Structures are given as structure tokens and as C-alpha cells.
Image (cartoon, rainbow, N blue to C red; front, side, top):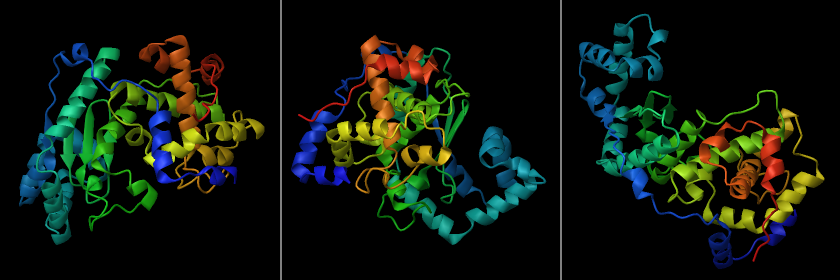
Length: 334
């Protein structure tokens, strides 16, 4: 319960956050941005809601075969006509029409999303020249799917990213729903893309391995989107970030004293890695996923200590090597 006694008034927390957050430059590199990269985002919700007949939907399924196969899971239907009939019934539902109208009102223009994604893709291609720009679609999923990210295609369920006070909300826990705001959208996509480059040792099933995996993933997002505040990468509020930085020494002591780094029990690992409103093994005031946050700090120290380029960092699959060579020590609050 020690973490509870370390909570300070909001003004102090915000000051601690400003001092504690990793001090990386937020200026985008003009040499990276100058490279040519064309990204067009197709707003499929418009095309699908304009369709009025089964024939119209069959045409769209044929026009976007990858979307039909991966996102709509066409293989689960006996025929394209069957899927088209199902889509027609869904899109004629009055609630779906209201949801579509809400999305159009909230996202009449997505040029800012396109700009941020384009810049992120340029950064990825700079570090990983084999990266190929995927097709990007937006859609209204009926709150059934937030994001689908593959090497070839990205589908954004815009209805998941309506404001938190909107009457339509996804059926997920409140603490998770708060992360489905527009500023989280592109970082979430980049985080998903990071898995393509995040090498792991499948034989290592320790908590440390999980911590380093997520630490590399968050480090990847910050490298690709250097102007993005940490809160939109890990999904902590500024107050939660302030508290974790201010209590980093205590958090690290908890992991060391309880010999958690080499824990292999999945139930124990989930306490520190899995989605939860708080890390109750430490305190009900401690945000969830503290193992991921701690892994991020370790990875950052490893990169800074050894000046490892991003591709080399992502290829390093030995969590023990990263930990030992990081020289990690908790930062003491100033």
C-alpha cells in the first residue's frame, strides 16, 4: 500500500510528469519526411452505406476482395450472395444508420489521420526499407471491430473512436474505452505494426520476456512518432504517468523483492502485464500493465546505454541481454 501514500496534489503530479516523461525531441526529421510515399485512405463506410441492393454489396465484395476475405470473413458464408444479403440487412438497420451519421459528423475529414499515418509510414520505411505501404480503409463496424492490421491492409473501425460521451460506446471496460479517443488511433496502429519487427525467443516464457517485448513495442512507437506524448502510446493518463515515475523506485523494489522477473506462472505474469484497471498486487492506486511500463524504461535505457539502432533493437530476441546491458536503475524523483 506504500504507493497510496506517495500520491500528491494534481499540480505537483503534473510537475512530476513534466520532469519524469522521457525527454525525447518531438521535431520530425525533414530528411525522413522528404521521401516520397503515397497513402490513400478509402472510406468504405460511405460506399457500403450507399449500397441499396444485394447486387450492390456483391459488387463491393468483388471490388475489395481482401477486405471481404480478412475483415468480413467471407469464408464463413456459403456464398458472396449470402454475405451480401447479411450486409444489406445490417446496413438498413436504423441504429446502424444513426451510428454511421455519428461517424460522419465526428470524422467529416480525416486528413489529419492521413497526415500522421503518412509520416509514421515514412519513419518506418526509413528504419525498415522493406516496409510496404498497406492499403488503409475506414469502416463503421457496428462496434464489432476497432482495428485490423496486417502487412497488406489496415481497417479502422471509426465508430470505436467516437467521443467518450457519445451515446454509442463499445462493450468494453470503462478504463479501456477511455483509450479509444482520436489521439490514440495512429499510435495504436503503429503499435500493432511493431509486432512485425519485434523478435522474441519462443522458449522464454518469463515475465521479463513479456516486459521487454512490450518495452520494445512502446519504444518502437516513440521512435516512429517522436512527437507523440507517452500517454497516447501506453494509455496512461498524465496523472498516472506522474505517479508511476514518482514511484519508480518502489515499483522496481516490488519486482526485485518478490523475484518476479523470472516468474513463469501465467497467472502471476498476467497481474503485471494483462489489461486491468490497476495493478492490485502493488496497489489499487497503481495503473494496470505496470510490467509493460517498466519494460519500456528498461528498453529505453538499453538503447541509450548502447546507442543501438532501432532495427537492431527490434531484432534482439534475448530479453536477458537487453536487461543486463541496459544498466537500468529507477529514476529518483527530483
